Amino acid sequence: MPPNLNPDQASPDWMNKGDNAWQLTAATLVGLQSIPGLLILYGGSVKKKWAVNSAFMVLYAFACVILCWAAWGYRFSFGDKMIPFWGKPNFALDGHYLMEQTFLGKFPNATMVYFQGVFAAITLVLIAGALLGRMNFYAWMLFVPLWLTFSYTITAFSIWCPDGFLAKMGIIDYSGGYVIHLSSGVAGFTAAYWVGPRLTQDRQRFPPNNILLMLFGAGLLWIGWTGFNGGDPYVVSVDASLAVINTHICTAASLLTWLLLDIVFFRKPSVIGAVQGMITGLVCITPAAGVVQGWAAVIMGICSGSIPWFTMMVIHKRSEMFQKVDDTMAVLHTHAIAGSLGGILSGIFAVPKLNRLFYGTSGHYIGLFYGLADKRTLDGFRQVGVQLVGVVFVVVLNIVSTSIICVVVQIFMPLRMSEEEMEIGDEAAHGEEAYAIWGDEEEKLDPKYELAKSKAGGQVEMV
Image 1 (spheres, rainbow, N blue to C red):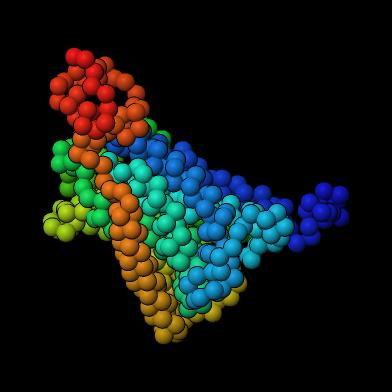
Image 2 (image 1 turned 45 degrees about the vertical axis):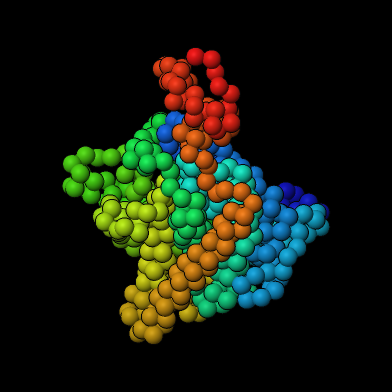
């Protein structure tokens, strides 16, 4: 054996150097989706007065989750079984534990803690998208560790841990359509209900302060998804390659479908709409990335570019309930609806052979389409049923847990900024502004601005 492949203390015989290198790379790509991807996307998508606050919510969530994840979140999600939907509490900080082989894959626990940690972090970052432009930052600081502990870890253990009850039922969630996107969409919408809406003028007119920055963040999000879906086989394999190409095929089809619908019905191609279509495509393929064929990825892209478009552009505008809840970045449509759509379509298009490559056994893993073709009709319908059970479980869990967390946080501090703080934005919340533009100083000399600033706790300037 070549000397560089000989096992030693730093490279045990159970570790595959290639797998470990790719897993660390994939994790870093996922981390870049949050920092700086969504940080820039949110910062560019909101009004200028909210750019700092929106970006800071992302930065804080990422840092807080990474620390809490290593301290207790990982073992809750992937540790020894305590109950059917939760692992035993424990640390993932001990050097001996971190250098042992992980429960799946030929690499150490340290790599898995990092990989799963950036997944947990982006889930909270996605929730922030529903709350931009009005949530009290101090309330957000409490919400993040509480939701990670009492919602995310439960979903992750139930679906991804081999001892989880939904994992044992045979649910297909390749890379987080349920655990990350359906969870964040429902939790974000629920939290938005409890926090309350933005100012009326902000809801009526909330133009992006920098569309080019928004596109830069969107581009990082798209390309970073290569690691998001390509890293979940936990091995450098043909299945990982399939997951990557399916991800980009579905996303492209979804973006183009959304774009065409905008052109047909609104007579203008919208770049903001194109980004929404991109996101729904990425989300929809996530639970199915490595277990469906390329043609199925195209169909899923068409569905993800049209169904969430319809719920956002038609149903949302006609629904009084949807109008009452101020979901700033429309995470209900782009993540909850697209994620559940992807989960259900996984139950239809999942290929038995590809499931065997990913799960190590075909078992009951068979899409309805192949169940009908292979005369395993009951197994096909059973798979769709399990996917639907997963949707119901995640929706109910996140409505209940997010509501309880918001009520608890509200006991200690308001969830929403004051009206005066929301009039000003970043300067009232953080004493900082994203960038100065000609004319800002004249605006600040307005007596209304000075009155709002003084009520928000700032210093009244001499006019």
